[in-house]
Length: 333
Ligand SMILES: NC(=O)c1ccc[n+]([C@@H]2O[C@H](COP(=O)([O-])OP(=O)(O)OC[C@H]3O[C@@H](n4cnc5c(N)ncnc54)[C@H](OP(=O)(O)O)[C@@H]3O)[C@@H](O)[C@H]2O)c1
Ligand SMILES: [Zn+2]
Ligand SMILES: [Zn+2]
Image (cartoon, rainbow, N blue to C red; front, side, top):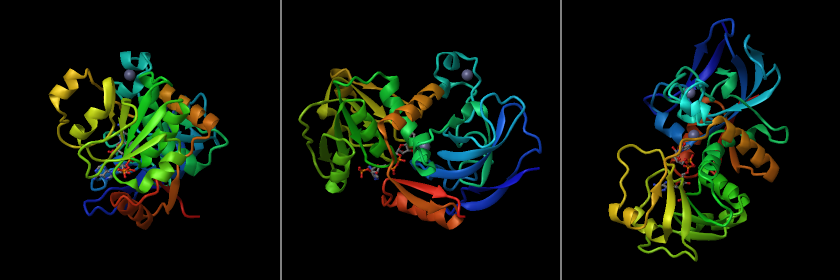
């Protein structure tokens, strides 16, 4: 029985080291992976006090493959993200929208005994992605959720290079969204709480930077056609709607409890589309890795130890807005 370390959320808010035991023999297309790095996503903060295996931006090395594995072999370097399985037969799967499969296995809802914070994990081959050789583990890890999510919002809904894309929030998702949108060829406008991230946002590819806190009216040189909202809290829509172009699309990517609330009349009078979007389907995830490799899109990471202390430290820094821009946990040698 392979027994390995996992880190689970705990009611105290301080994640705890535990063990998970899996059957001796791998079945079907299961793959046994040794974890070499994991990003810490804003969504992990919602599970901090839940007794579930934490982490969904994993990178690791294949140690063993099940009898039905067709692609991966021992020694391959792989990544995985928010969805761990899909059926391959339903309408969503057959149209390449497997992230919406009725049999999907999402982080926090399924496979609660393991995550990407730990020593090892067992995942299906279909939910693992080969990592380009040029990408280090810590660079590849944040792409598995943050990168996939923002690339998918841009790619799936056919963003055009002639459009102005707004990125609201410069955190793990936002700092990657600036890079992807800029490499899509778009004009990129960043909306951030304060001026403090301005220089870095411009360096990452933004063309314009707007600090939002305390302002009743925002000014942009061109209205925004698509707005990716990557803040960890719902923004002030009254402030944002006036700087969108007519028929603009908003992608409210933030995970937050409660209802979605937005001024009704401003939405209808301007023909605004509100487009929900969950991480990425398999093909989009693969394309994201190719695109990031080709254009050398790299997260800016801050390293922490894959230990109880390291995870708690990273979570507290993320909570206080002190992570620059993605925390990545690595096993201690
Ligand atoms: N839809 C999906 O599939 C999906 C996938 C992954 C994550 N998410 C969600 O996306 C959100 C961002 O995740 P992340 O990992 O990028 O988090 P993050 O690194 O904490 O970044 C969030 C950013 O939000 C802004 N912010 C912080 N506190 C705020 C507050 N009180 N009010 C308004 N804005 C605040 C900050 O940007 P500024 O300093 O620039 O203002 C911060 O950098 C989370 O809600 C996460 O759960 C969704
Ligand atoms: Zn995530
Ligand atoms: Zn399906």
